[in-house]
Image (cartoon, rainbow, N blue to C red):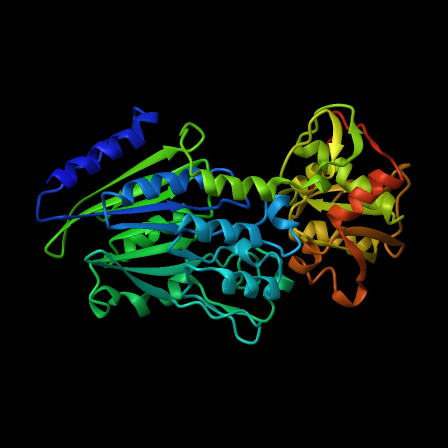
Length: 474
């Protein structure tokens, strides 16, 4: 009992940074307290891992039943990780040093391509799970659909599931389609029945779905699969703490803002209670000094501090859509450029523009490609797909039931007139019916590298205050 009282004292200290968070329930002497710490969607952020390690290691001093899990999307969002010589290496290194036990694959784990993902899975010292992917001949090691971990006297089974709604006419995650071409995915709801009896088959004390589906699917999963004891999710970047079918459904926001702690009190194989709390890592002051030193060493990257341009004003993502498409159009000397809004991931401050800011704005390592299409083909694309894109070089006018394409001077393109377009290669991969690969002129640079070269060699001043060239056909 003294040991348990000490644990409660430590936990009270950990949550003192947020008065709204409940203190953990007091276990009885014959009960086990299991603490599952969880994160999701860190997207390359490293700083708060040193705090996570301090928190988890502190609890492990008094509680042997502690796990640390990740619900996917480790990569894409920090050039320190994404542009490292071995892409993604710093993230897995830091997660190894932090002491992670298990992770589910998220859609952005595929962003670097299969060869790099294979390297990162082999680098990891923690388990990977995903029940609805077959890596086939991609070269990526096949993750287990589930894994049972033993912690103290308890056995906890984790089932991994990933979202597969990345392309309208396909079953793939929300990543670059070309990078998962050699893999096969299934809808999570088509495979779940194969695993309903895992708890008894594994003689587990707990059966947890570790998912990268988004909160709506997590709630649906908890509603329809009562055999589960909990759902720890990611993908929708929300703070979620709900109880569905008497089980917790949780998610810890994104970008390492929060660390979740899901507690179960278990006695003689029965779950007595569960509770969830969140620690605001930005408010938590303690950290593991050794791990912080490693993180700081990764952040010493002077190549990202190079000033390559100037912004005359603060640029939000709509204004950056103008800058982005103008840069590609002028750098590749084409008639027009398009950019999907979801591919612009951060704003740019007024003043000096560094290479770091460009990689933050455009973090996905998408390639650059030039297409030559007729005005009618471009019109059909916007009308038939209802795609919303930032645009430069052309304008649109609705004439009756038709969408006509105009030059910047207002002159109308003839339907059969050819237009050259510079875009990232994610757009044609998603809309391959309108951008056939046979028409692609693949360039040597990524879009981020192309924009950096535009600032260095063509125009270093960005003046797009108030600009909005986003278009979607209604």
